[in-house]
Amino acid sequence: KKVPCTTNTNFRLASVTKQFTAMGIMILAERGKLSLDDKLTKFFPNFPKYGDHITVRHLLTHTSGVFDYDNDVPERAAQLKDKDVLKTVSEHDGTYFPPGTKFRYSNSGYALLALIIENASGQTYAEFQKANIFYPLGMKNTVAFEEGISTVQNRAFGYAVENSKFISRDQSPTSAVLGDGGIYSSVVDMFQWDQALYTEKLVSAKMLKDAWSVHSNKSDFDGSGYGYGWYVAGPDHIWHYGSTCGFNTMINRFLKKKTTVIILTNRNDAKLSELSPKLIEIVMAAKL
Image (cartoon, rainbow, N blue to C red; front, side, top):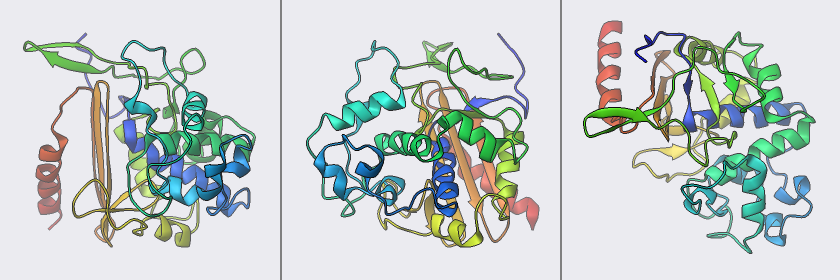
């Protein structure tokens, strides 16, 4: 529709959402509502016995080995919710590997974390995030979007390119799962988030340091380990990407230089792995 994109345009963050889900867990841990060493079965008593060996920390660090729900979803299936992910994972009788022994990127794990937030807080995931993260930080238009319940102001819709033309690609069967990728935000609001992470507005400096430490030395990207909702490329560089139907996003934070590069796009195949280093180089050169 040729609506101009501005710094207030809200994009689906996709997996950049995971750092907010991780923060929700950390807030509850510091309030004594849960422990990172709590077992899955504490929150879901009917979960299969193998949940006794999976901790909250395993879910945060993608070392749980739980079944990947998104690898087995029919293209025309009705949209799944986080609770559907729990049901799907519960139908399996084990994990890909003993929890804590390997890294396997897991959207299922972060959907389960969203449900753990609900269990421990007594609020819905969207309500908890708004009350404890978005509102306190002045992220006025950021929302964990739920069709028919909430709206996204200044919303960017997703697109793909086919035969040299843009076509709508905004939703898929997994687009309504919140914990792994359902938050919408803008560059302006993400700046508020970035700045707050230099403070103790949400959690202690000790907890943040733990979140940005390597808990899994290996990840699905060479040269980066994984913390709590963040890839860790070194002691001063944390980052994450997001990729979903119609959206590609990326955030790179350089802690000592207090420099952050945020890229939000509403198109498939945006090649952010090529664009991001170029933007980082430009920003770093400007700071010299």
